[in-house]
Image (cartoon, rainbow, N blue to C red; front, side, top):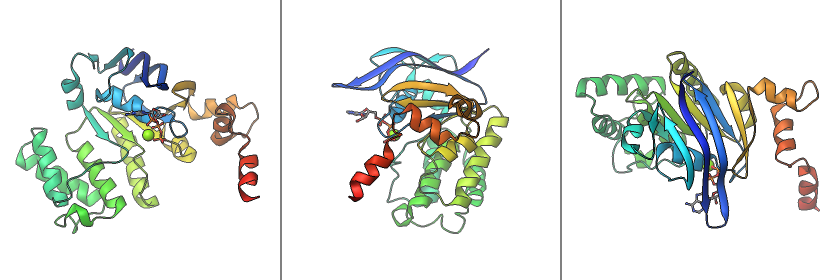
Length: 255
Ligand SMILES: Nc1ncnc2c1ncn2[C@@H]1O[C@H](COP(=O)(O)OP(=O)(O)OP(=O)(O)O)[C@@H](O)[C@H]1O
Ligand SMILES: [Mg+2]
């Protein structure tokens, strides 16, 4: 079996904090793989290490068979990445920015124009593409970042909380798009701490906590792990991450 992404015992420390600790993952081609975990559990750091933007202290990462530590440039060519807080060029218009990104990926002017038009239409941004990005709403900026990640037809998508800021209709468009791309063999890694999203979007999930992988499996398998029938992913998540006592915390807050 060939894997799109392999992590072998990867660790990363920032000072005394283990952002990621002895993490191993194997993600098959065409899968939608979710990293699910509370704030600070190492999701974004894991993604940045896969992209070669953060160097692991130890362990090995292969993307489409390429060792990231040896050829990070080649790896980034085949990945589309949406960071958790995308930095766009505020002084460009939406269309100028997307055209610039397409050009950087070596796409021809005709191909750029065609792809950009298709995406603007799909994301319901048509008519707004000639306005400056600085005037776009949060969700509109998020959509531009998604289009920028998808424009060069990447084999692998790394989406760090891509649905944050999107309304339900736009979120649905993105979810459907991820599934359709998966049919064509595109592999997606997707981070979220929203359980319903993980349940609806991912074929397989890793539950992360304090940099470690606590559990892995299909959403239904993880729900069965909770022991009782009819368990929700939220119950599994709270059980594993030791947050079952949230009620006490809330009660203390309102006292
Ligand atoms: N550049 C950095 N310098 C210092 N500490 C860092 C750095 N990047 C990450 N960390 C720490 O590593 C841990 C994991 O952070 P990370 O951003 O990977 O978490 P996350 O799961 O993406 O969280 P969130 O859900 O809030 O986005 C945190 O304790 C964070 O403070
Ligand atoms: Mg994060």
